[in-house]
Amino acid sequence: MIGPDFDGVPENWLSYLAVDSVDARLKAAKAAGAKVMRAPFDVPTVGRIAIIQAPGGATIAWITPASDQ
Image (tube, rainbow, N blue to C red; front, top):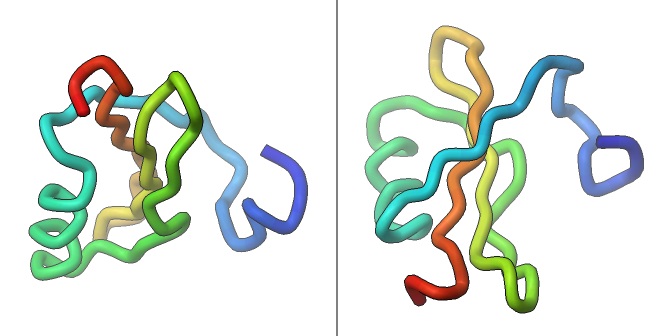
């Protein structure tokens, strides 16, 4: 996770969890105080991904796999 797309993302382990809708989950997470570290983006044939940081500092990535979109 090196490069300008990851500026501000602290060094850590990053787990990816499959979710039904990255966009819907992100909206709820922001309402609960999460910080968006990387806005949703699409990776062809992989899926839609977003990276957030919970109010307590934990960072996680969500993915809606391309097969579920």
